[in-house]
Amino acid sequence: MATAKRKQLDRRWLFLLLFVGVALPLIFVIGFPIETTENVRMVYNLVENTPPNSKVILSFDYDPGSKPELHPMAKAMMQHCFDRDIKVIVTALWPMGVQMAEEIFSDIQSKNPDVKYGIDYVNLGFKSGGIVTIQSMGKQFREVFPEDMNGTSIDEFPIMDGIKNFDNLSFVCSFSAGDPGIKQWVQVTHDKFNRPVTGGVTGVSAPSILPYVNAQQQLTGLLAGLKAAAEYELLSKVPGTATSGMDAQSIAHLIIIIFIVIGNINFRRDKKAEKRGE
Image (cartoon, rainbow, N blue to C red):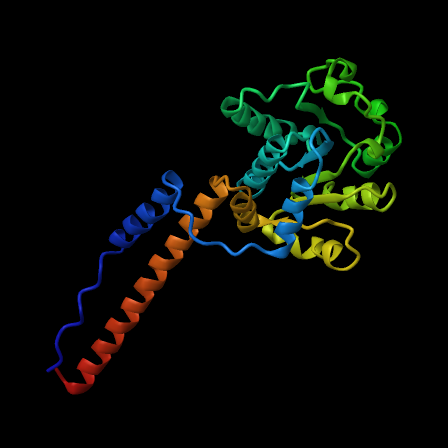
């Protein structure tokens, strides 16, 4: 007579283990090894090789819905720029992009009080119009952004001295969740005004953007999704939320694989026991 089937593990224990396995890396960064890809190294090298006191545009073209993937890479790049003494001019083609940038700057400034608004960083705010706005910036910057997000004339900020058009910028970076975003920056800033463009996108958007890197080198590298953000943090030697997120993801995958293996082993044992008539 066959014995009763092996008692199943209460799934609540699995959920608890997953919770602990995901939560701990978000609190204590582990830093599992991550292989850096060429596209991420290209972005990193672009910033690393930009001379100090250069001025760049970081365009925040996303909203809270894409924050988990794009926020970590934007923070890593902004921190990298400040570490290299590169001046950051923020724009936004999406309304909520202004707030996304301010969150990052406030966090960085709290840890780096020497970084000053108007000298090292300025947020010019949101402008609608997409590609038309970018074209106008390439011709006469001040006609598009006469004031910053608070309504203060940009002539009052030392960081804006000498900024007339894209010729006065070292590169443009767009953190893009869709349209308008990185495609429009490439089509105008690189293709028309011949300035380097780089950026970051969500993982699901990457396949449609990668041809700009691989084919005609219109993009200088690309950060695609949370893994690319973690790679950038690794290169910058400043682990952050992307590194923690990848650690949590790796542990969750490992726990699931272990339980799948255990489940299959128990299943085969039960089958063998039934055949023997135990």
